[in-house]
Length: 123
Image 1 (tube, rainbow, N blue to C red):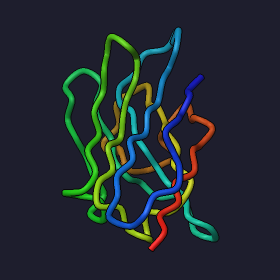
Image 2 (image 1 turned 45 degrees about the vertical axis):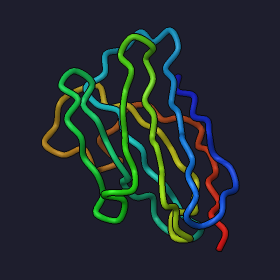
Image 3 (image 1 turned 30 degrees about the vertical axis):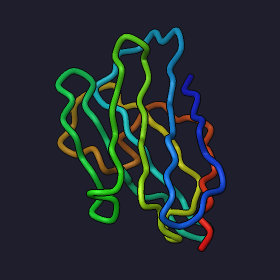
Image 4 (image 1 turned 120 degrees about the vertical axis):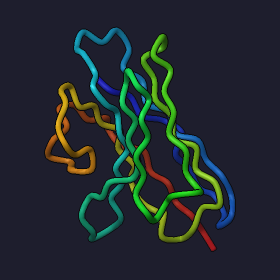
């Protein structure tokens, strides 16, 4: 129910923009987030945005470099990634949380997931 796109190969210091769409969604959204998983590592939180208020949350490792945004009318969320580093390499997943909870950084709290899009940063 979620479609992620925008991954690719980029040199360190470069930029990519990821998009996540929920076409024809029939479910409510409290927040949309991006997680990533590097090879042989656990999935980790990257950024989240609440759907109505637009509150923003970022992992410390991406603050100042990544920006999450949403377009309510188009049912999309985007992740603008600047100044990419080797350690940003991984599969990026978008996720939707339908209801409120006190944390947005736990992957277990999300209800729907996109298929993942690969981001490879080369130095």
